Image (cartoon, rainbow, N blue to C red; front, side):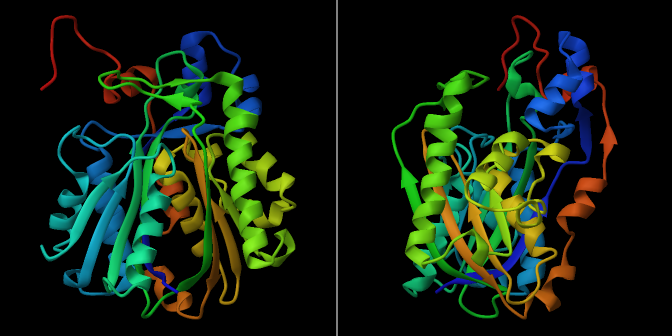
Length: 351
């Protein structure tokens, strides 16, 4: 089967702490931090969007892959915050990484699992020998309405994966998906902020799909939690991630490395891909990884992955997740609101 030839990540430089947001809305920061298991989140600067994040992640993935970008046969960018309503982000990435025009490219949207959907598409194209290499990206600059619970977690970041059969650093053993029509979270056309179903987003949405996909993967592979060295899940907050991991039988040593939300927030389509990248940054040859995404609406993609010997030669060729997590500067709420475009003057329209 296809495998991961290279991976790359990007996380914006700026951060805002939970207590800074709570101070503005009169919330208890300690209760927020404990309840969501989030301390701070990344904030994109005014000149950063899903396209720029995708380009940076893609370039880093190609550094590790060490392939000619002209050999890329497909590029998919999964996001729910594409900068254009009608204009693909994927073509911007293709041009920026100097890919040949003889490729297929598209933007994908499935809330927070669009990035892993792109990985699955690339896996299929590679396995069928339709292309030699595919580039799958999950990236977002997530939105949360002022004073909404999402404002404490909605952040920005992304990860890119070069998928192919040759010179892989990790190999896919299998994938399994679980999908239903569960409208727990949505944003209508033209609306700046999404709406969510509150507690409804837990049991019938996130947990049902993540657990079902993971258990389906277990059954398909004939495995259980004890067969994996690492586990990564979608992380709308740290609380859901940890609870899902424990329900499936994973312990802290297995799930801790991929848990990034406490330090950078929920990067939406970038969340599971970034968590997986953090694991690949420290994984040893022979390690087995389970990765499970989740997208509202609703569905989950699960992957069983085995790391091979080439990881040792490739992982230091591009910035690691932890380096970007630690490279940061804090902003206050006023700067954050300006950067995120939360301040809009009446009568002005954006073109």
